[in-house]
Amino acid sequence: MTSVTKIIDKTVEPIESDLDGWVKQTGNPTMKTWIEYKSEDGSILSGRWEATQGTYHATYGGWEFVQIMAGKAIVTAEGGEPLTLSAGESMVFEKTFVGTWEIIEPITKHFVLKL
Image (tube, rainbow, N blue to C red; front, side, top):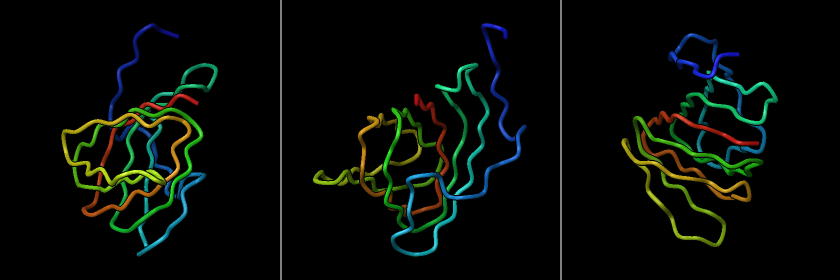
């Protein structure tokens, strides 16, 4: 494996099913995930994720950095205050995150996930 990997959007087929730990709460949101990079040991994933309007309850299993590329969502950790995410903003989720993603406008994010 090379020490540099160029990430090229849309060169892999999307996974068109809900992620493990994500359960629909309101509406009928759908999601697509493109895994564009996976470390040799599988502990780090990077790619792109899209979702349509609605609300998911999410239970994370790993640390995640996200940058919102388009759209808008309100993310609320259980017991926490709602945080609005819009295009151009970034956020870090600890692996202990449990809460909701309310997708207000169809959303696209780039992510790096450490399992």
